[in-house]
Image (cartoon, rainbow, N blue to C red; front, side, top):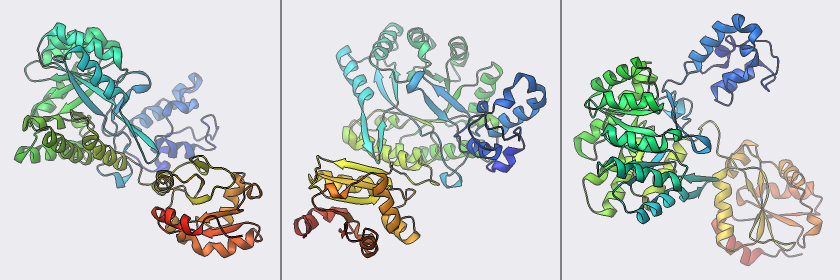
Length: 474
């Protein structure tokens, strides 16, 4: 997106403040476009048949201005469809990154049916809970290692029967790719890959089956842009670029530099011939070793490097948690909007099976704080209630200092959660230790009918605190 100011987008809107989009003003709608919370199509006056001539130029200019610098490519269909690319900045602190790079894990047409189905189901069901979100594997890469078109087609068919995740069909043989497409073209897979040797046949497949395609020119950016121009002239615009991924040594350094060059050319220099999402292949780490531990470790290291250096999609192999989770965590944090803290929904939640004798703990709705406290309580089998106060996603210490957490706000939060202390046997709640200074004022606000107890500063010390301080003395 070429503009980051709502004021600059406002001039391309009708400026009538009609409210049909759900916003009160066109300026608010412009801000929503920048944050990708709104789409151009939601501005109804721009698409009014009676006003098409009046707004035609504005609409064309608006579409051009808000188009992402790195083209957005859709792979797959339905709820599991993934968005690849679509970024506008080099570094997340400049605005934010929007579309995390999907991880595609491989299966091959040389696997026997039982092993194939088992691995596909593992990929399909793999998920881990992390700071309020379920992290999942997004794609399956089906690799042809036999070179047999019939075997590849049967493999693709079996994969489709066991998962609805988007697919990457991997082969340099156009006949093999075609066999796979005949099985699953309606699923809109990404085909990998067009090369200098097979580009004519693969381009025809992409055109005929209307699917996105990867262009591969290892360590040859000039050759890569030449292929881009050729495919664009053929009317094929759903492109993903593979500039080559080396697993180690000086070539790995060159790989990283090429990724940076491609992102810089698209974002900072607006070179349209390079403005396409880029694929990384951490799976190539397995070319250097047969040791499963070393292979999984090195694949994870390479993936982490590419998450930080502009890869828009990755193909991987090792599915063990010790290999996947570090990259999942890094990806989640880098692709979280730095302008907005990660938050949980404010309100009262149960931990375990609490009753009227159970303690009521209090914390903020900053996700990292909340889930840390919840984990410490749950892992120690403490049946209780946990109230998350809305502090706009700011932690306890910072919200106490900044005024986002105050005694009156705490009282209001309990009221909104409809907590009736009269129905508890202890008529009390437990403050975080870092909010200890509020205890006296809270006693005054509640007129000493409810007691604000001061807990430990570290939630990991709650079990020891409970042994000495709970239940409270009357």
